[in-house]
Length: 97
Image (cartoon, rainbow, N blue to C red; front, side, top):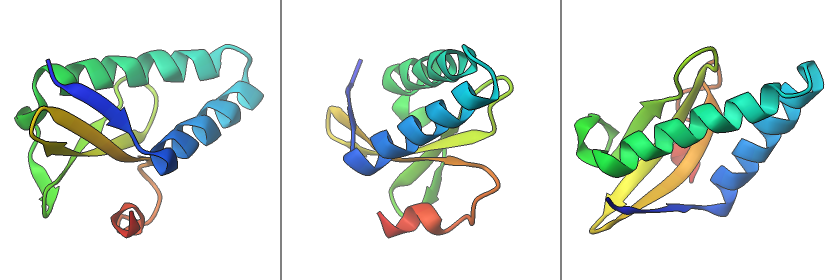
């Protein structure tokens, strides 16, 4: 399994989403984090299973009821998460990272 590194901008995306879900309903933010962990585990075990969407960046969709995509790149034995964004955001916004 590869090592996963979450860049600060991606960590801020995750924190923002967590807080938003918690404001909607206490505990929903925790559900979001659990779904995100599941996504990270899937990516860490099979990082090349998902197709490249732009240059070397791949996107994993967060499962269940959370419309988020986790954008990552593979560097040797390391997976670098560059963004975690809502699917309704402008599709090129993550490319600025």
